[in-house]
Image 1: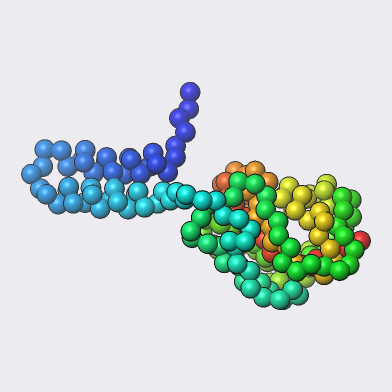
Image 2 (image 1 turned 135 degrees about the horizontal axis):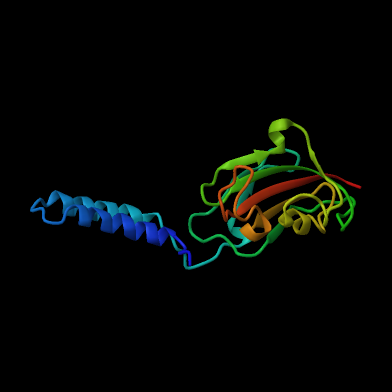
Length: 185
């Protein structure tokens, strides 16, 4: 049976290993180093009392321009798909089976780093047959109901994103997208 290694397991190992290495020593510096390493290891495990909502993620910028996404430090990542229309569109609505041409920006939750943006290529991306498109499930679900001309925030939990990782994304990462619907066909 394989054991599951967690951040807490690694933190414990980091805290215990220096103590074992210092056994039999009268040197107090090993105890200080152990305390320092244990504190550093413990700080990598961050827990929150609350889970963030879509309203906790701040998006600056107007539709049809590159957004700026700010992920909060005061709450944890959500475990379900969150959508929020930042600007309501007035055109055709995305329904299952339609194509949606979008501009987007992706920021990962854990490190708050931009990972991809169609804005960088100055070329919108077309999602063919939304609902069954070869994109992450978070997009197939999260684009439904969006209207042409609108801007939407999607916060995608790992099971609807890249899961175990891929495309330069860490395993079990929560994804934050801001999507502008350029055209809906």
